[in-house]
Length: 125
Image (tube, rainbow, N blue to C red; front, top):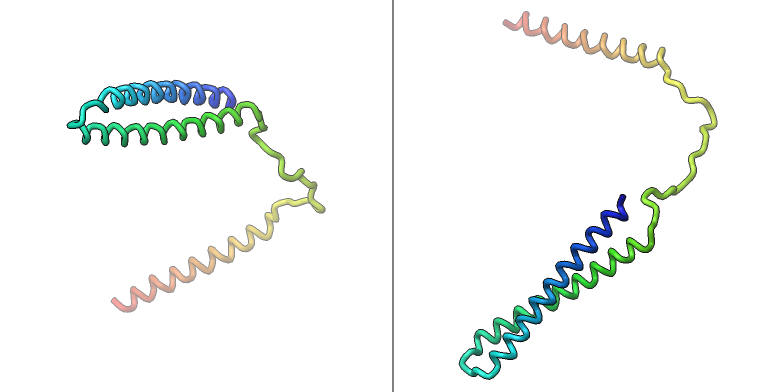
């Protein structure tokens, strides 16, 4: 499943890479065609900066394609077993009696404090 997803992403990246290459070639051709005109310096500088940006994007696409290709070919398992489980030394069961006793005394204490608070309010009014 993950491998199929990586393959699809790699195909999309390759399509975008080809599109950027075509864009780069078009800009390079227009830059070469515009070098004869001396009055178009600002346009040439803008085209050069676009070419540099596209070059950086192409390098990033190449890096991503390499990473996804590595992920596809390595075919590493999704779930890695770090350490095998060990059985416990003794059985672990819930301590029902202790839990009920602690809950009972906590509820008794809480209800006593509420009664004291309510009685204190009744006497002060």
